[in-house]
Length: 460
Image (cartoon, rainbow, N blue to C red):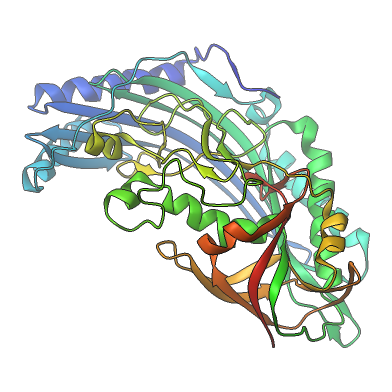
């Protein structure tokens, strides 16, 4: 399913647009110099199985309105889930009162934006899906996992259907309406073989297109089962400093997360980024390229507009190892007198944040994961990381989870707790190879397997 524009002319969605525009007008009439309103309606159906039994079925639905105002370079924000006229008037008054108490900041300016066409990522069958259908899909997910191998003990199987729409309007020209719907699935548990109890593992994914459901469910079950069963018979690693093979999820936790945090223009401006002053410079080996691609509808963060109603388009962060751009929302852009890159994040309950939408790390020429194991030869393969990563310095230290010891290019045993440490920014310059094809990680990003030299490994 590709992102495409289509008319959203339902009465409910028209009302979202009308309310956001009306609230902006009310704020300006009350004395705001700039105003931005976001009105969001959501519905979630959550289903959870624990120990094979249905333990959770909840439905949550509501509408939230958020208003940001600027007056005399002072910012104020207020929100409500009450839609009565009196409540909206209170929101305007509260936002202006908070602005009066706030310090002035020349960067308190709304980003310039243009009204865009309504945009939808809602598949018709998800729009019409019932609670009973969500429960049955969750039951099928659990059945598929438990039927795969009798040693698998699934503690939790969860499925959540989220549906929603939001409208953003501002006195700076924003006028955006978009809707979305998706299924989030997850499995959590371990493998038990007699007295041998393996370490727990979990996996999840996200689906917008129901036609992809069977394939995504099968992939989720296979990845969960492979990791959990592989955790049986754990032994010890060997301590060394050298190459380690990171799964897509582990690479994202240890390397991608601090890199993206450091690429935040606000972090750069406030002196909290190791990437400050490095635009146009090499920060990694030439095999590494990273794009934030909100047009990739397979990923949960796909969108047409950001939180401020600015168009969201693909942005290259790193190109062949060279840092090409920082991420900007309206505030960060105003600090430097430039345009937003469309990376305002968040919802109607708070002022906009700053972050990526749908990260894609391009594959390299390393072949499939087995080829990278062969290139590793002997050493640690880590599938998950549990520990700390300092986003400012890049220093990390923690435990390799669902880890394997590799000998002769083959996984020979699972490992007890094994520590690994290093500096993410330094080690990006020691990437040896990336797998040819990136994999979807928890439905939110596409990341390849990555072989990196110079990592400190301490056997538990």
